[in-house]
Length: 291
Image (cartoon, helix red, strand yellow):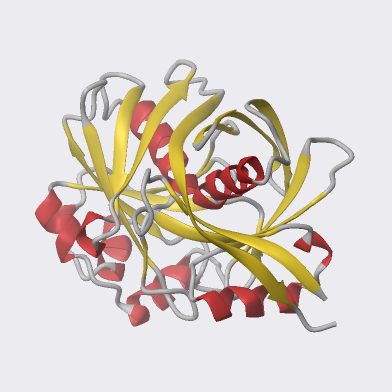
């Protein structure tokens, strides 16, 4: 079996920045094991597999090297840019069927604005437990971490400065204890999303990192789904003065990524999060899958 694919770097306007994703057109019919094997073959964090939808314009399946996940941000941008590149969609509104629900997007060439679903705020997590995952001290964390999802859950953890952000190193033993405390049987869900503020108002920035356990790569260059969850947390907690800001990630990896972010609704009744970014086509071709 063969499928056309496009490799797109998301949340960047040029190749070899942001976060890469291979988009396998028509691949939603493939079995899970084949999709996961493909992700491992690419050495990317995630890949997407598209197909027709009865309820939206396109169906997208998202895979890590270890599992299927309901939604992911940078692969959504990459998938839309790939579809636009092939003329399979036009500029304008787009609706995407995901396991997390229907994601609305707006397309303008290589620029994509997606509206992530209303946040679900989960449990708070002790600073001591989360800090240990990154080899940090509880004093490095300025707000009680909390599980938040706008389609995929993360533990949003706000650090006091960029020095703490850059010092973070994944401790697998501490990650195991963290997952056990949260009742997680695997260590590739609800990871801490480390973020620091730099005057994150309308003209401000957030800087973030996501450290990951094998078989995923050690770090994610840009995490669009976590960016939406992080934005909702910051706005709800009163940690930012305005609902619009710029999110940046991947700089220390040499893969800088950037998103324009807007939280929708008042602090106590958020209805969604807009996350906008660009995508750059890196390569296209044909992939041969086991039949």
